[in-house]
Image (cartoon, rainbow, N blue to C red; front, side, top):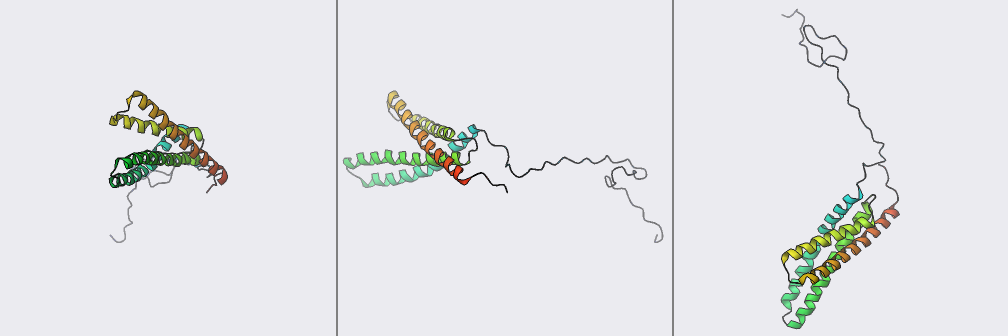
Length: 189
């Protein structure tokens, strides 16, 4: 046993391409190599179509608006609890509407800025559209709550809310485009 040559078992796929098959074995198929696409590093992938940025801006506005609205309404609830007389109630209700409009407008500016700054081919129009979509969704949620306002009141509210959302997002989109232009072309890594 000590002087006999060692026998090796054939290992499937271990031979070089084109090598003779092992004794009594079948030739392994030739290995194919997959083509490798190498990027030049200048482009970071395909640019999103502008309508994608409407959806992204809508989500960004909601993400910014919900915490702001929660903060505003918590503060206003405390104000209502402290104000006991009817005269203070009117001013608190006016503050409620005004501060919620400011929170919505700030969120619209933030979402519009995101679209303008990082939106590729998207710009002011897509930013304004995302603000209008959020306003319409918020209006639909308020309508589903069933607050009494009448058909004319609801129509007027829709126009006002869409105008505020579009204008704030348009302004944010303009600021984002200015910021994009000031930063110059994107640098390659």
